[in-house]
Every structure is written in C-alpha cells, then in structure tokens.
Length: 279
Ligand SMILES: Cc1cc2nc3c(=O)[nH]c(=O)nc-3n(C[C@H](O)[C@H](O)[C@H](O)COP(=O)(O)OP(=O)(O)OC[C@H]3O[C@@H](n4cnc5c(N)ncnc54)[C@H](O)[C@@H]3O)c2cc1C
Image (cartoon, rainbow, N blue to C red; front, side, top):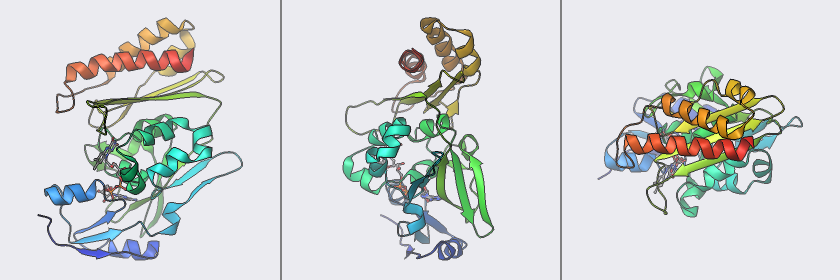
C-alpha cells in the first residue's frame, strides 16, 4: 500500500522551489517511475510537488543557429512526433519511441527519464552523443550541467537538494549521421538490456558513442574520434570500436541479461552502429 502524502501543484517555479525546500518533499513529473517506486516502498515522500503544470517546463524551442531547448516536462510522445527533432536529432525520436507504450509516453517526460537516473534510461545515450547540457534551477538560480556529469550512480544525479531540471539544451548538431539501438528481453515494452547511441560527423572527424545499461551510469566511449580518423576502412573501424566498447563497460548479471550477454551485444551493436553511421 502506498504511504499517504500531501500533494501540491505549484503555478510558478518560485512556488515549486519553496515547496521543495520542505523536508520529505519530492518532485513529480509524469509519475511513471515515481508512483511505481512510492507504491513499492523504494521511495517515500511526505509531500509530492507536481511539476506538470509549469508552462516553462513544457516548452520546446529552437534558435536560428539550431540550438534546441527541450523543457524537462516535455512528454516523450511530443519528442517522437516533433518535426524539428525528427529532422535534426532523429535518435531522440527513436529512443523516445522505444520507451514503453503510447499511453505511458503521454505522461512520461524527458526530465523524469534522466532524473530517475536508471543506468538503462533510454534517453541518456542519445543526449550523451548530442553533447546535451542539463539546466538545473533552484532557489539560488540556474546551473548548467554537461550531461556526462549529470548521472553520478544508480538512481543518483548531480542535482542538489531543492533543485529541479528545468530544461535540456542541445547545441547545434553538425551534418551528422546518427543511430540508436536497444535490446530488450521481449518485443513488448521493457527496459533495455543494453542500449547504444552513435553520432558520426565525417567533416570534423567526430565519432561519439554512448552505451547504457552496462555500468552504474550510461557511459561515453573515449578515443573514438582518433579511431575514426585513423581507420578509413569501415570494417576495421567497426572491429576496433567493438573492442573499445567491450573494454569500456562493466556490466552485471540481472533479470534483463547476463553480463556475458551484454558484453557480446556491446560488440554486435558497436559494429552495427559503425557500419550504419560511418559508411
Ligand atoms: C511499464 C513501464 C515501462 C517503462 N519502459 C521504459 C523504457 O523502455 N525505457 C526507459 O528509459 N524507461 C522506461 N520506463 C520508465 C519511465 O517511464 C521513464 O523513465 C519516464 O521517462 C519517467 O518520466 P516521468 O515524467 O514519468 O518521471 P517521474 O516518475 O515523474 O519522475 C522520475 C524521477 O525523477 C524526478 N523528477 C522528475 N522530473 C524532475 C525534474 N524536472 N527535476 C528534478 N527531478 C525530477 C522524480 O522526483 C522521480 O524521482 C518505464 C516505466 C514503466 C512503468
């Protein structure tokens, strides 16, 4: 049974910050993670502060130079369907579309997905390769956190007490090829046994690859730019990136996959990714 809690729906960010200074308070977005955890006793709260009604968190905008700003409260179906996202960051749409069901994606938000900080969060690897910046806000103002510094452990982030994520900024994306892969146990909705995102820009010789569900946080492979520049043969590059991926992760056995399976799939996905975005 769920423990009783008070509920407050602020109309402004200032009201939200004030409420979140209360001992035992917790922010709520779509509730698709939080309510499951409250019901299961994994988390407890005396006061749930519902961020869904805050207009600032629901905005998605783009500047002339194509910096894309996504409010933390933007729901995942909005990302699946948004023309600008589909055109410039298609892997964000693909990752969002891979999450759960249509009904659940109408509630689930981008902010909730990263703040829940599951190592398997499907929106994380795409945000890593897009070099996203998480903008946190609290009573002391705003703070910009590179996405690679946002996840600090299983279900842990670099957010301070009373801070919330207000938006995620994606810097102008080069003319790059991108892809997102996810392996689930079942064909229906399930968390990833492993997920992987990649971005390759042949003009600047940039190759970014991020892997989820294979360590305590999503990880970014290091040294891929150099491999990309030094290996013009795609098959050779694929082999080297696969070896790098396998050596960079620390998977565990859990209900979704064994560590051994994850290591094998990391090599398979890395090769597929390189063939798809570097050819
Ligand atoms: C059946 C089912 C299937 C699922 N499948 C997947 C899947 O395939 N892939 C996947 O990645 N996830 C999956 N999930 C998990 C979940 O749906 C996503 O993580 C979702 O994006 C969470 O968003 P939310 O808005 O519902 O977050 P909430 O549940 O409202 O919040 C999640 C956490 O983040 C905190 N929080 C929320 N917003 C903010 C904010 N702006 N600032 C600070 N803290 C905040 C909350 O306090 C809470 O701790 C699934 C969940 C269910 C129930």
